[in-house]
Image (cartoon, rainbow, N blue to C red; front, side, top):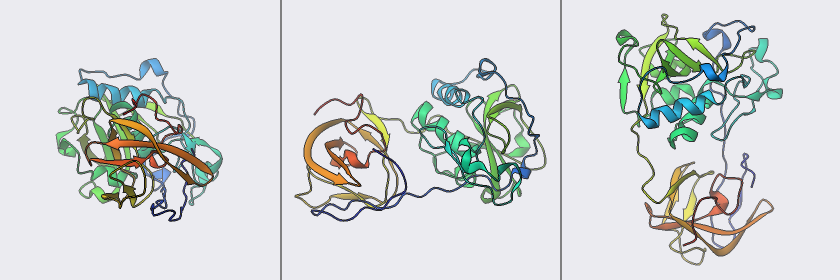
Length: 294
């Protein structure tokens, strides 16, 4: 199934939830200066350079798996590189809609989700304010308390997380992996402890899927959760926005049609004690891989 911005209609009592939007995550390439000729490190050089918990190590590994992928303003998702948006300020990013890659926050979002099942919001400024952070570090603390997998921040006003315009994954030993700016590729860099460095946050230790479940992301807004795998009974809950959900098992239930797709798969979400149509699981397969039949 496609996972593109879309609007669905109400059919057979099922609220076929609505619109998913995407925003760019960099404010200006000039905010973190680099030359277009910057050379990315080989993937073998992108690794944790200090001890780290397994969850943090997995975030680093996922970020490092994208070494060499082009920077694209607004590009990337939890699933991998995508075509970006043309940077309105012109310059090297003026044609990023033709470049398949990542911007800084989508690389971090990808690494957190693929590595550790951690769902970060879009936008570096939103990631800087993420309520799920397990620790925060000020610029004055420098790099000493950090460990691989922590997220490094830069902002026009380092005291205001809302001004954060760049984010990267710390590797240890003063190194980081980043999607830096248009005209470059995902690379290993020295951490820039300049006047815009705004500290760091730790995401390792965030809530993980319960044993026996598998985590997926939903798409859309106001997605209905049902007491049974069908639409005959009223919804017991709504997911107001794209949400990580932990799936226990799946069954073949009522067939649902949307945007030319037909799917009779339904997944059970133990957290909500309810069912969701697989139509609204953000995965290309209608029958979810690795999830048993109920």
